[in-house]
Image (tube, rainbow, N blue to C red; front, side, top):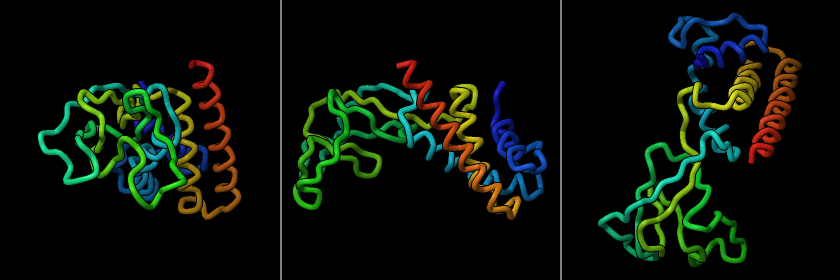
Length: 184
């Protein structure tokens, strides 16, 4: 079974650093991993359309409408990290009027989607996955490489190891994206 400690130890091994037993250990490696693990995991999840982290739901409209600009407000799921699809619309960058009036049928503000679309609002999104057993093996490898790259300077004081770790991270993400694409 996969665990956070296995992912952390994989990263530490890549750097030639001592392995840990727990994130609560009183050593530099545990403190370093603990300080960044959750943020790096969430950042990696947000960075790509990982199929294992994709979720679908239908949202009911909140009882209170937005003060102006949109007709409905919807509360995002608690595990929401990144929007993938609203009803049948993919998020799009609108560069012709990015400062002025809203040009989309929806926008995200805080933990809400404000929209001009009636309920139920169909939502596909990237979810926060905390259990490593629910993560794709390629994602776990990419995450361990990312942790190694982020911690290389602090744990090894070696720019060369840091550069090697970043290169290994790029290769791991490339493999994961390729595998994810094949599955789709």
